[in-house]
Length: 255
Image (cartoon, rainbow, N blue to C red; front, side):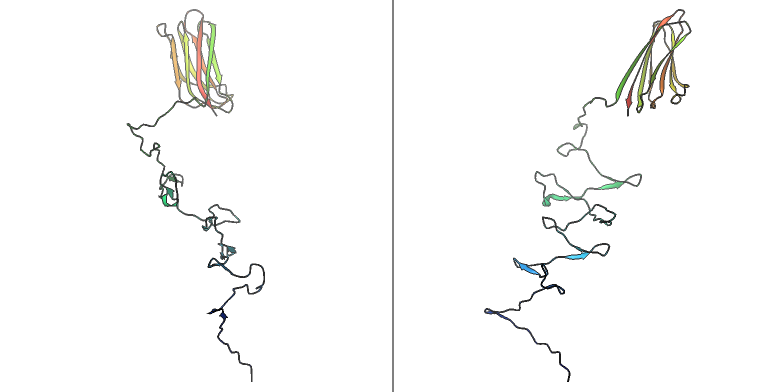
């Protein structure tokens, strides 16, 4: 007759209480280091494992405050599916804490496939800027390079011309061009801009004439002027005798 595989109930006596003492151990290496579940402070201490998004077994880690750690930074090899969660911000408080974290910021879909976070500019008390609560503005130095280029053409003959040229600095763009020109007698002044770097040909932008009553003329040009392009004031003496012709080119150059 074959052996009978019978089972009996287990009882254990420990001091005056009957208790069953059980160890939870690793099945293949029960005596190995760290292979037995420990109980301390009436808590069962285990290592929590789970599968990552690729199916690889990973141990779940906690922060030093006991929170489950998450990683929102994408990495092609170690974090291909980063964690994501909504942004929560705190009430304005001298001591921000978890209890003050109750504000949800908003956003709106913008152009070029972007999402723009809503941002409001307010004063230090959170009040809107209005006509009665204006935003203070202070004038700072212009970050651009300011150019003032003066030219005096001496004793220009009747009906003859003299060119005042300024070349925009390499790596810069000329902006907000103004030019002043003057003569004691009759004269014609022409603002020109070169058609290309080194082209030697010019487009006329404006022509002005002075008079003995108004010997000065002024030019304004808002177009951007590229690096290496020549700005020219062509000055022609229309009086009946030689005279000096004056001009000044003013602009700012930005990188």
